[in-house]
Image 1 (cartoon, one colour):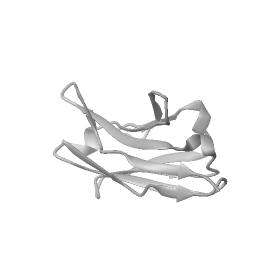
Image 2: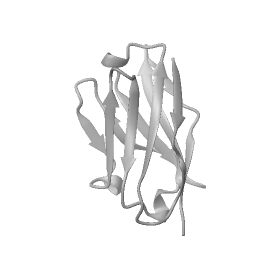
Image 3: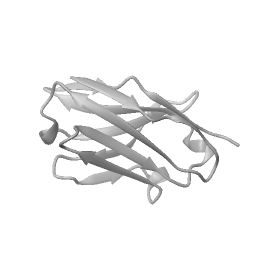
Length: 114
């Protein structure tokens, strides 16, 4: 299983950013996919997840601002982030589980700063 994240960068407070993760080596259509983030000096926390049938869940700090989606043809999972706040600054990781193991993308840095 390989996960390749892309799309991070610098954005001003209140701005938007979209990050994506391309997956290979797995049955993508059956997988639950998730985004985690690790802010400086903090542990890695779950941000959002999406099941194989499109069910979504979000951490309280991002509800109403972030949207997770999946494209089963392109085998990608995307996190649309709106109304970004400096507290959202973190390295974002995509995640899936396969045969009882966790797999992680390499992480993409999102910096929210003026």
